[in-house]
Every structure is written in structure tokens, then in C-alpha cells.
Amino acid sequence: EALRLTEGIGKTGTFNLKFELYNAAHIKPKFLEFFFQNELDSLEKRSELQKQKAQLNAKINQKTTEVTTHKEELAQKDEEARGYTVQMESARQRILQIWPEMDPSILSKGVTITAFVKQLRQQEHDIANREPRSPKPSQSNTITKQYCGKSDEELIGVVYEIICVDELAESKLMARACGRRIDALLLKDQISFSKYYEKFKAGKNVVYLMTPESMLPFNGKVKEDGLLDINPHGDAPTQGFLGHACNRVQLRAKHKNLRSTLVWNLLRDTLVFDKMVNGFNYRNYLVKKSVNCPTILCVEDDDIIESTGMMSVGKSNSPSEACFGQLPGIESEKVERIQNVEAAITTFLAQAKQFRAHQEGNKKGEIEQQILRIESEISDLQEELKQVNEELKTLDSTRASSKSVSSESNGDEDEQNSKKGAKAGKRKKNFVGQEDEEEEVPPSKRSR
Image 1 (spheres, rainbow, N blue to C red):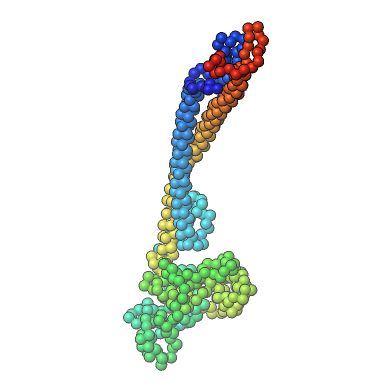
Image 2: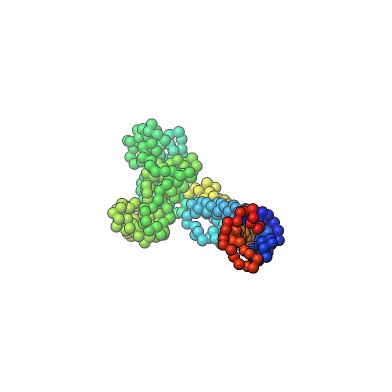
């Protein structure tokens, strides 16, 4: 009943145990077969598998770290590329802001950009070396003429000299739109105004007087470059739109602050279009929306669409030659604009070159290939790890099953032997093999 294995180390295999009674040959021996698993073999195998599992996990962790590092490197390169892209787009927007009439597609073609810059430099040369156009008043006024080219502590100047327009056709249209106001004398303040008023009120010639402080200034935002922040209406068609007249005129450096007062009060929100058909398209859209439309100047057709919608048709026998003057080339805002757009294009090209160099040298494709290769290696290692885990699971399962079977076998045999031993103690056999009546056999007399 107390038969148990006390050692777990030995030879692995199937064994037969033979049980027989000493000095009792007439009782047949009992045989018990069982399988023994050497625990030392199992432990060594398990230790080897655990070691292999640890090595595989270490390799997987190392490879995973390499993948993470490479992905971080890719993310950094993508961030650098985005930085270059943002800089290029900022430079591109700056170019189009300075030169809105430029075709944006030019910036995507190197040869075209070079030709455009060459054309700009030729324009800059021509403007800088030109003879500036002189202004002409709206009427022959001897008093106004005597103040031409003059300024003092009270007089800022004559309006048609203060305001300059580069193109002659546009200059004449703006002069027509302003009428006799271009002949006005612009005085510095109300005190100067009072002096000139007293001086000319009894004269026979009409003189127009103005002061900046008596004008209601533009109530919107004035940009850093001095232009007024004003735009066409909503979704109205703007094909052929050249800009607002108040922003297309040019001023000398000493008169820059007059754009939001003098220029705004003379021209207001007057728009400039290339052709009359485009001007009417804009106006008709606003009329259908029940929105007031400002005056529109149509340069190529030499026509004005007034804010009321009225147009003057036909040519006068004595057309007005009134026009604003033209800045000397060296002072021309167009020269400054050309220089600014050249600088912006130079910045754009330099950033584009840096971006191309970054893209060519970032080895992004190589890094991506390395990531794919390492991820494939990780997949192989994980498959190996899976097999090792299955072997460990099988090993543990076999060991547990073996112990369970041995325990059950030993229990069954113990129970049978116990029952038969009890019967043997109750029986007494004679020499001829006949059984006498059963009687209790003391334990000391039982055979072992």
C-alpha cells in the first residue's frame, strides 16, 4: 500500500514490476507495468527551451527598437521636408502678393522663371532710365500753375503733382474720374486753409483748397507696405481686374501717408479693369445681388462706368489732356516692386534648391527597405518563438500526464493487493491443496 517512487531521476522508459510472496510459490506473482519519465531530462530540455525563448525575445526586442529608431528617423525627415514645403509656399505667396498678375505656373518651371526674371530686370532698367511724364491740369488755371512744383510750411502741393500713375492711359482715366479736384491745392492744416481762403476768396479765378485733417480717412486696415486692405466683393467675377485705383497710384516717400486720406477721398473704392466687358460682368453681378457698385475704370476701352451705371459715349472735339504725373524711375514704386519680387523669387529658388538636396540626400527609400527587412526578420523570430512555446507547452503537458497515469496505476494496484492480502490472511491451505475452514490468521503469522 505504501509503494511510491521516491526519486525523480533515472532512466526514462517503460518498466515492469514483479510482486511475489516469499515462501509461497503456490501464489502467482503480480506484474505491474508503468512508464517512467526522467525528470532530469525534462528539466534540461525545459531549461534549454527557456534559454532559447529568452534569446528570441531579446532579439525581437532589439529588432523592434531598430524599427522604432528608423521610423523616428523617417518622421524627422518628413518633418524637415514639410518645413521646406511651408517655406517654399510662403515664398510663393509672397511673390504672388507682390506681383498678383503673375501666372503661378511660372514658379513650377525653372526655365520660365529665369526668363521671367530676365524680363523683370529689363523693365527695371527701362523704368530707371526713362524721362518721367509731366502732369497736366484739368483746366488752364494760372493760379494753380504758379504753385506747381512748390511746397512750404503751409502748402503740401498741387494734387495732380502729388499723385502719380505709371501708365498714361490709366492716368488719364483716373484724372477724368477725379475731375477738377486734381487741380486742388493741398494745405497742411486748418490754419493754412484759413490763410489761403482769405487770400483767394475775392479773386476772379476758382481755386480748390483741401487739407488732410478735413477728410474722413479710410476706416479699414492699412497694410505694412502702405496699401489699403480692400478687396472686390465676395464671389463677384474678377476676370480682368487690375486692382483698386487707390492702391494703383504711386506716391513719393514724403507723401506715403496721404494714401488713406487724400487718395482715398478722391478715388474711394473705384476699381480698375482691363476691358469694359469684364467691368460690366462685375457690375451686373452686384446689381443682381442688390449691392451698390463703385465706379469702374476700363483701361483698354478708355471708358468709365460710373457708380450709377451711366457711361459717356462718343468722343469730344476737344478731349481733356489732364493726367497725373509719373515718378522718376529711381523713385518709381514699380521699380521697388520689381526689386521686391526679384528678391522673393531668389528666396523661393534657394528654398527649392535646399528642398531638392534634402530629398536627394535623405535616403528615405533605403530606410524604408531596412524597416521592411527588419520587420520580416521579426516575423521569422516570432514564428520561432511560437514553436518554442508550443514545445514547452507539450513538455509540460506530457510531464503532467505521466505523473497522473502513474499515480492512478499505483492506486488501482494497491487497492487490489489490499483486498487479496486480506483474503490470504483468512485462508489456510493443507499440504494436499485442500482448503480448511477459514479462520483468522494473526498478523504475526502472515506471509510477507
